[in-house]
Length: 348
Image (tube, rainbow, N blue to C red; front, side, top):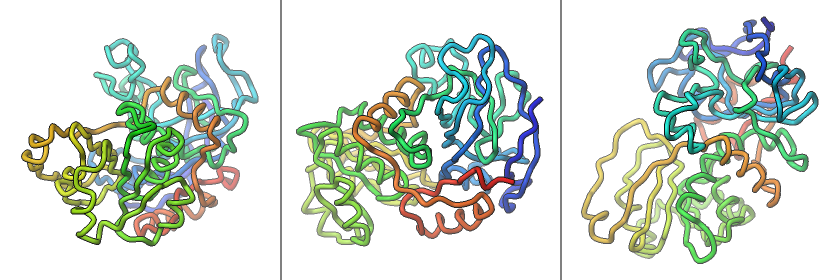
């Protein structure tokens, strides 16, 4: 076994603290990664606080992992010691169901094996995440980081980046398409950058105009404050695609009316409460309401290569692991532009 140092919560809503645990010795197809940086996702906070139920403790969060290969199993074919690599939101899947066979492992019918707060395919070994100095992962679930992408700013791409890239590609954002991103936070700012690089007309719909200049620098063509009720009249029937990144409760029916004929609204944020949908707004203009969950391994690699080609990275604030609880509080207060990344070299 490999002894690993990390930071863990020992119960729901507990502060994170140093935690020593064991990773498996690398199997034939495994890669051992020395973690250099790990992004903080809002999901980490939900899971640590057991807000979705089913959290298992002690929990080492983190699923935006980047680092360098330090050891490989004897049958590993695609990675060698010294390679720059990443691990995203899952580390395994059943590999045999229809979604898995199509490279859509995130929709595995047996359930993907999440990077943390999950259970390995043996049905008993808990998974632990990237707030640690090492991780062991099957090479089929490891991603290659292009040489021109800085590791620290790339970490959030492995969740925030692919969460926006996947629906933008699936619903064919590009030249001639009018795309709106609801919320300019950790997820939303990636959506603006990627949609702009795809060639779409990009609009940010934010509660206020506080981030207008940031949005414009990221590639937004237009920026509106949703606190102004007049914009819902002005933009009615305008957008081909709307992606909502917000996790707070809101009236999505107002936004559905902003879609044009055959337009689609995609929810990637996860509000705590269920929202009632007014079907008239869907039926009257053949609109669609959909959801999307990260991306498969092939699409995530495609996203990284796309970001490499277009020089897209996340806007980040680097912190030492010792300040992770402070970072959680700041995230809840929307006090970050736009993603926290932990420098794992600060882990002693």
